[in-house]
Image (cartoon, rainbow, N blue to C red; front, side):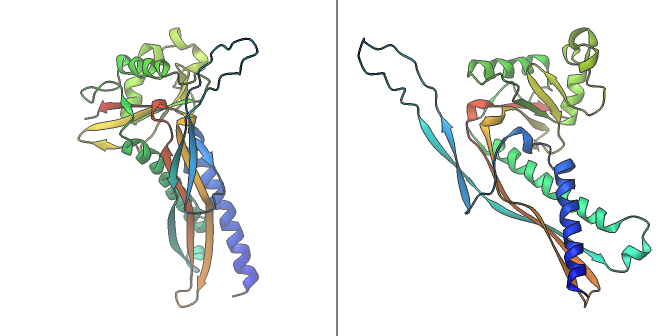
Length: 274
């Protein structure tokens, strides 16, 4: 097989996988703080503490805030998603087999990206919980989380995100303040278009990948700067022709990691899910 044909095939796959990953692969990547092109097996995010303003005597030295800087290390891990495409399958099927495999690989890596973020939140023992897992996502639980974020001086700057399960999304739809036009206006109803909407200064999104343990779903409300996502290698595709199989092996791969930078900017909302 001509090398140029394989190169062209690879370039098309790379473009399709990258496009699919950007379009539908990950729902959470844009909700967290990201560092790209990391060199090495890990990277460090800086957690910056609060400064305190104070007075000074005339002609005296300006007081130093002594802001605490705490390095948070995030380890990169390598992930792969591969599959075979038989040369003659593309002749027999009615759909574009290349696009199907490209999308499948991109979606698998996208789910892994989201899983890294969710696992980082689950594993952090400093994350505060609002409410208990004895009930669903109630208005009281939402307001408790809202109060905790405000009490911790988490910025209310349009970069807060609330990620809930689909059962909890249904719970929200039963809260008038969330779903009734009399409260949110006709333009902000959650019934229109994509299932995501702004409420209480945050973008609320349903997600199927949140951890479910013992009938309790772990939902989260965080600020973008509170969680770090490190990218050592963006989604890449390698296409290799195997003559003994008369097929291409399509390998999609990436190197990424995630970690909680500042637990005060993350609130866990455990919700009963039957």
